[in-house]
Image (cartoon, rainbow, N blue to C red; front, side, top):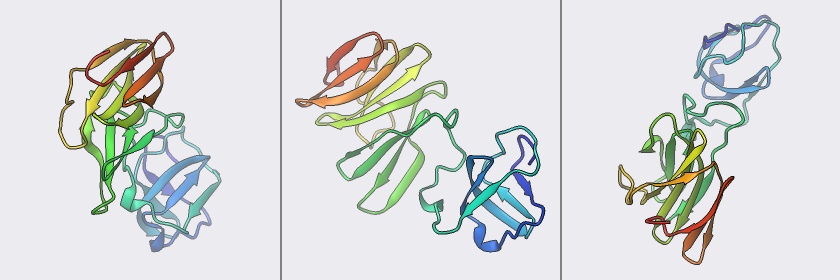
Length: 193
């Protein structure tokens, strides 16, 4: 493996054409196989994240295919990030780095990156639905912002609410939300504090 490259060169491996779109773990990190060349050469959907190395252990998960709901090139900063999710009307809504992805359960459509997009230096940490829409909590350094969205508009449906500190969690409460940061607790309807 070469750092920053998606090419995989195996020694004694038995890669097969059916491995395309399968998940592979290399050195403890998850990837998706995007192309097959031969038994010793495949290509990953994203570049190898670690330093150049050889003799790494790997495992291909051939039992399922993640391509349908794959996020593709990850917008998450590192493996410690997560994708918080909730349901809203016919949608499953989940944060993915600075994007909010949506899955429509009615027609099985999946929009991984452009359903709702914040500036690239933001990180979505919490997504909670309520009676007025979806409250998206994201961090920007030591500050946070609450954004109210309706799962259809390309923009927020209310002015952003800026907070002190990093969002720890958002919980629905009597048609509103309780928002907890590492510096304050507040009750909001998504339109004001």
